[in-house]
Length: 503
Image (cartoon, rainbow, N blue to C red; front, side):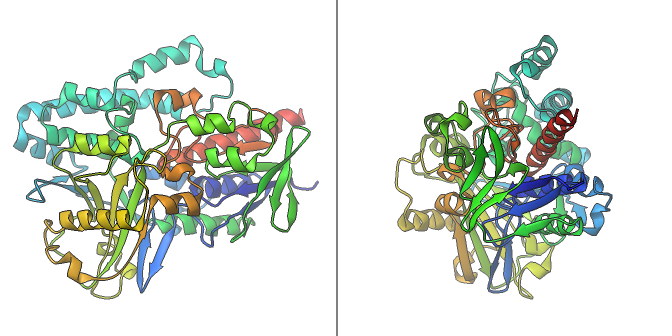
């Protein structure tokens, strides 16, 4: 019997993970990728002997990274060797004067909280306990399952579980209940920006992100984050899968209500099934041409949806090493985080940015020339549609100045501007052009209440057969571990349909 064929559009994290799972299930899988490297936003930048992870840099929930390899009968350590980080990161306030090291060791964290106030230390423990309870509900009833029909959500059991999540208040409101000190709250709430939503607007469920860090730690993959992408590519090829790079999909071909392949520059490539890892809004708008097959996701609907923030990232090849900085992950907070976040989501020019700085070469010296460090600096900014100003080279230069001016205050970085040997950047425009991220929104659709769980695009296409979606704009959402879950759900949906069609 001939194996059934699957075309996977895009070698992003969810595309690779889906392709591995399907190839391992006995399908004949080909990935079509427009870039020349695997990983999508988990890409790599090579610059004059320095290597930078392009996008994601923080490994949480390592068991989800490992699962992709384990399901194929492999030892993940052979592909993605990891180490746990302690401290996880350093947080800087007051122009770099005040530093808190955030640990995955509860004892160390309690001591840090007690140095601020014992009341907040107590609040922190209550917060962890409350969120751990919600996390278990979310994990069992929402994150790991599809919502194919409205009745999958609108039934008494799921709704009662949903009410226990108390998602109607915001991440900020929840924290204020437990923790009084503003800085402590900031250190625990900014993580909603990992998935592109404001803590003031993010459903309180998303405060499980920092809780996962506190309880389970964060990790570093040897060779940097791109090792995960190249490790998945290697496994996929070992299983017999094929990848075609620098090939762009122009259209998903749908005939008589069934996806039958993709249109490439050289013509139609037929396959039995299609798994789309292009950003969902982009795919609906540009890859599915016929309105009948879009269902409710018309062009107008896609334009009107809420999108995550974008990011502006500098990659700096430095002339020396920085032993003065202890952590590879560092968060530099603006004097007024609330205003900073408001400006991001209102589209105003950001006066005083908060930033995240990552130095992989501290743990992986091969990512920089000998005796030197590479510095990655990320600033969350508005998506292109929300921005009330035009993204220009002048705006990029202004934000770069602001970022460097803030970094100067950190240990060892007083002369940062004179120590840069080479640099490049990724802007909202690059996210839009290079990764087809709609409106330059780095994390896809914003996970608001009306765009989460059953109200988020699901993996199974609603108005045609044999077509599935995976990636950050689909259920359950953005962030590498969650996107890995999205691939698991999407493949599960495809296999369920396949087994039903064989009956």
